[in-house]
Image (cartoon, rainbow, N blue to C red):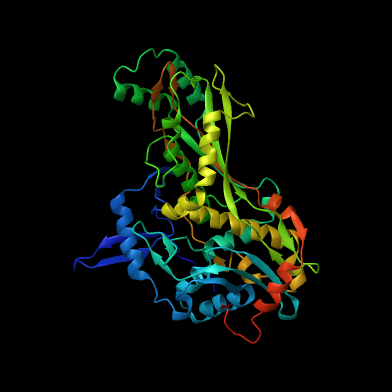
Length: 446
């Protein structure tokens, strides 16, 4: 029996009785991370009314959280073997997966990965708490507001971990070569701002549709949507389309100084990557500790030639570098105030853990092959419209003789590179000894 995991794709309607009803639709273009994608793959910002409606629907559909899962704990243990058994039991009985499975018992981070050969199991350990739905439909912790990890994202990470070794996981939103050539021609003719609305509209028309690219994970997956939504939101904050939700992170445009170097032929580019200290490994290779998990923003400039080619310079504009440093410094706060960044960090961590499991052959050490979790024909992940393109929105600011017009960005999850950085330590082995579930039949425990 196959099982489909409904995660976020929800379409809503008002019944004739006035009651709010909902149904799951695996091909819907519902909002994820504040974006909406239609059947043609065009990405845009979700309307606030739609997000509020999604929040009401998801809140109404939440299961009651077991009391023992509600409180925040520093280390919750999740057995992958027993999780599989719980999913299989739902499949046999024809029951929907409960929220505690869909939300991985409220895990918000994976700090340890433990292998128990005697139990033929792999256990994920990290801080967790109960969950709620915020005003925009995001599932977050009841006390911290941090995003909770999803079974759907874990399945995608595990199933793509092998191929992630060849190029990683990533996404980007970028103008086309033809659009950049048209942009350069148009900007070269601008001498004054003129009518601001007309000037902005002309720039948007010149750049045309920007292209969305996703690598390493299925383009229709929730995982992919999270990455592209975070990239999109980073651009909107940088280019002043939306106010920053945290103090100390002004837009890049507002940081440009009058009289500085022109941006008519130089394009700032930012991207986000996971940022970890070397992973600690016990002597026997059965206990692993992920340390200081974070996200960093990196930047460089692209040189724009007359024909629209982009050439990476490998150099960072000082102001763009300052904005990237601010983004890195404020990321932990941003991950709570704008949950899409917290979801992105969770996806990054699941990718790193999955790369570690594959690279270090932890399933072989455990004597447990994760047959159900790895089989896409048995437990299917959610599917959405694949993002393909986005309309250009120009945020134009004239500083002295310089035109500041556009920026590019992306997300790069170099999961195998992080899994390569390992140091031996006795510390995780001591935690492993205390974390064992023993005779506990539950797939999670505190």
